[in-house]
Image 1: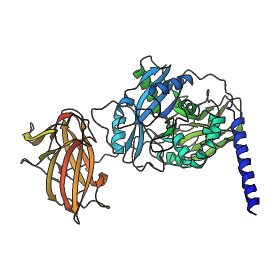
Image 2 (image 1 turned 120 degrees about the vertical axis):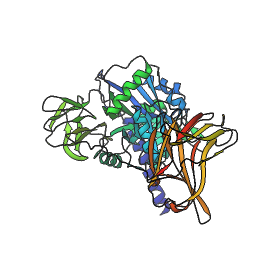
Image 3 (image 1 turned 90 degrees about the horizontal axis):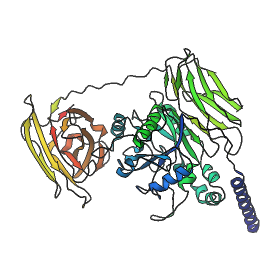
Image 4 (image 1 turned 180 degrees about the vertical axis):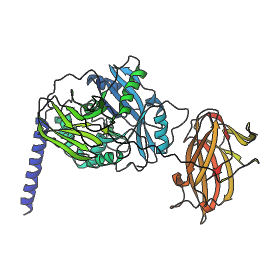
Length: 556
């Protein structure tokens, strides 16, 4: 009996191996020889280099991208921001390298591009980080939102550009059994097939995306999250899959409003502007090139609305251009639900009358073959006759103040940092706290910091949060931190705020503070033992100096 079972298992393993080998050998990309229209640029999104946890240099990446004839690559090394990656924008090997970063935030990871390098560290709070990049005209995409280790946890955020619908690296981690069994063999036989076989239909990510678009305006993108390595231990790895191999799997087609300029910064701004408009679509390139695909909406008066745009009225026509020498399955969704489907389509153009308001987007799949169920092309939505909700302003008026004219804060700092505090008044004779500081010039220790400190027992249970009015000698990030004491133990909570060169009022609800250490549960606001205005290595750089002016701290 055991021999029969062993023979059956061996036969099953051999058959499975044979199928795997056959699939790898027989897989071929569908042929689409149409040239890429001049208004489109093809590139890849979300890459890591030696500047963080990738295995290759920036030069390696650009060389591989140039060999694949990519128009652009977006480098997103880890950091808040990553200085080297952020400053890497350049033309190299006829490819535009766009420097960017992947921020590690309290809520998860956020890929950001198009920001100005600040003189401080970007905040770890998701909404604040999104707002800073948005003010610079940049883009923010929520990275691998359903990753097991670092999922995105704050879906209350607004004004982010979009969400990663497919992430190749995360798919490899998700399909771990395949990755450690058949993947290496199939990769040797046919890297394109092996990497494509990692991809599954992103049902949950699609649902999240559609929910986000009920009230907002957000775009979907395919991400490589390429590291060009396979970890085999804590400090060991194999250098595969290569950057070149992943570049053949998933791409982004961006519709630009001008030819990319010779100046790399200007060219990067052109690509980022298109991403910010949502005027792009994503493609599983290993299945077929999508050269010639287009999606737009024609209003009844003839006005054309591109992907990511808003149409004033329904009653127009959704136009899909599908100039492919093979059949495809087309699904148009309205508000996330199936609206029109075209099976085994061979028409070069589809025109679909739109009679109702809604968010319309389309997915295109190959009609046949091993990967026919995958979203080969994912187009971004067009928002038709959907009234945009005006942002709700919140008026906050302090009910009381903590510090008045008398000296309130003391200076606390680590060794070799310098700081001083004094009292002043503004032009209206209102009391001001003046704080000047210079941080330790080198990060010899784990941390460097200075703080305005107030150690006092307070009962803040009758309030909702703090109101800070501050300005700085330059733009700087500070922490507002408070501590509570209960049952013989201390807990600490903090949230950052921005002090610009003009007076700015910031209100921070207690519920938005991040716990640093201490017990679980809500903060014991009736047992506050201290609070601080703090600048350290979490929001600034070694050797940084500046001045902060602070009006009395309010409670609301």
